[in-house]
Image 1 (tube, helix red, strand yellow):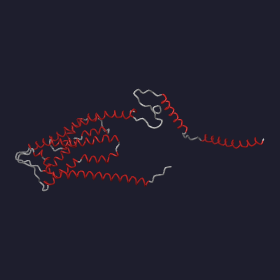
Image 2 (tube, helix red, strand yellow):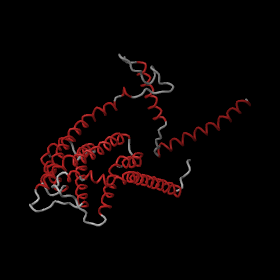
Image 3 (cartoon, one colour):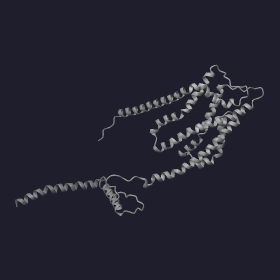
Image 4 (cartoon, one colour):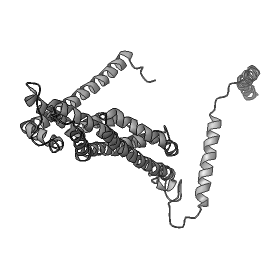
Length: 344
């Protein structure tokens, strides 16, 4: 009989497991902070040139003789370092996601791991593509529009702190908006919806894209449209990819259920003529193998019936006790008969 486990030992084991997870989480968080810090230290000496590069779309459209200004006293020093810190976090996203993946991956199934890695890589790439789209396409258009609509006599001289807040909002808006294909694929993969249902709700998606563009971008029609149209196109791309994924699922299921893909058994009694036949180009039925399989199944069924416990009824129990008593009495009489026959 196996020894019973001590409840205190189980509690200690659970606490040890939780403590080890917390220690690993702390290690991962420290590595993430150190990764961002290393990038920040490497970029800090170039804070001013980096800010000039980011401000180039606005500076190119300012009227001649105008420039950006700094309202706060410490803004010329702090704002470029704030930009470098944000840039360090953005550049460290692959490393940060790797640390998160290393912490979460041991608790995932194999099929979840197989789809998580491509989704993480593609979502990171799409986030960077969205930010690049905002910088190279959206910024020149909206800044040209804003500076050209200034009333006469108004000098366009933007504060560097407010400009940074403005472009950070646009960077995040376009980076998140470009994750629409990933969100579409995840919804279909988790079974929450189907490509057909999403296609039927396309008009609502288009309206929702313009609403999202209105909420995430400044209050102007240009940036709203420039965000809504890519969201719509990316939704269509995600819809197409989800349909391809749905078509692949039955093929993968059939491949997993195909007995030809299973490896042959190893060990004694598993040769070509016993248990399972080997595959060939023109397989023929093996009568002997089928006979052995049927015999093994029959013996197994008989053995299970033989050793199956069936409780006796009270009448059957009394009859069994009477039979045992008669046998014992017969055994007691038989030695007396043998002794009498020897005396004769």
